[in-house]
Image 1 (tube, one colour):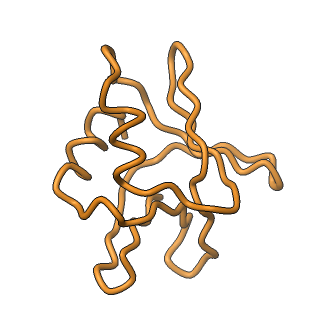
Image 2: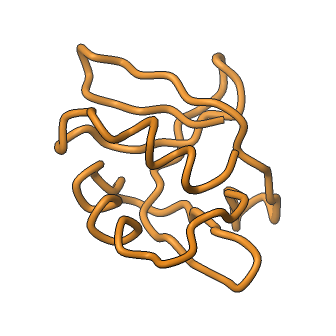
Image 3: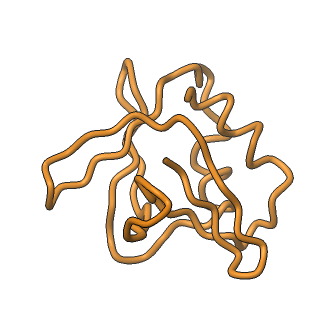
Length: 98
């Protein structure tokens, strides 16, 4: 998934929803707590406290060039995955990317 597509997908979500990475539906949730923009990619980093949709829009919405592929890096597993979809849990206020 590209960053510009992701920003379109989250454009109308509640600003307090939190962002998590979940590789498979049965896997653990990993909070997305940092975002790193590089020349050819956007990397979401796992941490302790998840970013909200409002924080993500504030950080990424002002980029001049946002057609970058999105990856998630899990440091403890030394694993980098490309993002290809998302799910929304309205009851919990969570967005799960995978």
